[in-house]
View 1 (cartoon, one colour):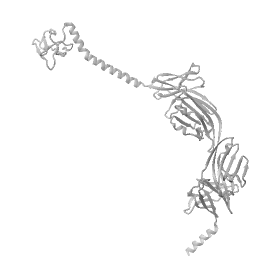
View 2 (cartoon, one colour):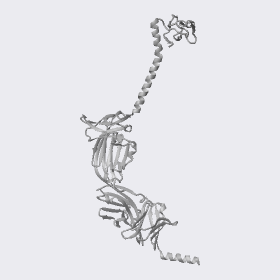
View 3 (spheres, rainbow, N blue to C red):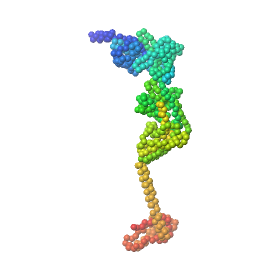
View 4 (cartoon, one colour):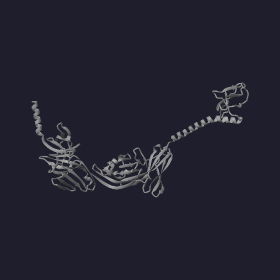
Length: 540
């Protein structure tokens, strides 16, 4: 009885839900768009799953006209029909899908995928604003008799631009021609504006009994607008800063690239001598060339992206001269709390003086030292140069580092700062000075003591020699023999077996007998042994 009841319920569900079976063929790498022919009902939740495991892609979602999950989109076209759109097809997408249009309508779609070199690559096309954009789309040879279409993706829809079976068709500024012999659609858009940027889909429209589908190529059209052209010249080996200013687009992406035959690339920044800093608060992109080289010369674009497919830029012509005159390199030092004056020479034709300090990020911007640098013009030093002086007063240890002098030139959207003089500034602290002075005093004292230790005995000996007219004599401590007089006032020392050539250095100690009351002094006797250096120790 229960089995019969379950079978009855399932039968009622199958009768109440209408199902439709579609089949479409796409190409790996391309896109596919299917018109279900069923009305889009905004109040009904949409459901999309891949069979046989019922992997959910879109789960019971309601929307007025557009539901997107990754590469899969359900949307309402101008005829208010439900459209199924799958981008960038791959082999895993092949299979059977279930799509719930509403509570009473379900579509089963079988997607077949084929490989064809005609349809496996999306294209990127870049065009300047005001010029003509040209692109082409190939299609399979077995689709030659089908209608040809061009779509453009909008924010929450896909707009039909051209839909025709004719060989040539023109809609406003869009022109399409079909070359049936080469199986190629050629498309051109004249007088391109920023609004023309975006994603285009071109291909073949296949009509079936109750539904239609299209196999499509993807074209990414980028529209760029040139707002100005500037030229700057820097010296080989010197530094150069470029400010790309877009204050009205602070949150937008800023960039700088170098033009070449392959397009505009940012790979030139990988040489290690260039750093880029994007200041989002000021809307300024700062580019710092630490050491200009001949390879840096060329044409650059410094711009900002208005959207994913539109941007505006200033073209920059960078020239590098090799005159050998710049950069000038200087080494300066200043005591902590002192003052240093730096003379900077810059080309005469430059405009505004500029003084900056390199930081850890290898950028160079005006920096506050302990006291703001005072820039004082000091007149011209030649017909093609001028000099200005920077005074740094009361510096701290943090003010030590690499500084640059240069000149700033402003343009409409760019500011150039040519840095021609490099200064290595050292700040000497008081602790360092005091330690140095103490070290010098200690070394000097040690030297004086050493000299006294050697010089005093020598001096005593010389004085004694002058008074008596006799040379100092003494015994060798290890070999000498000492004789003493009991009288306590006459002591002599003579070496054993002494000869005039045997003893050169000796030490003699004279002691007075404790019980002696005599006031007699010490006398030296003539000896056969002479010494040029003698140490004499007298009792107190």
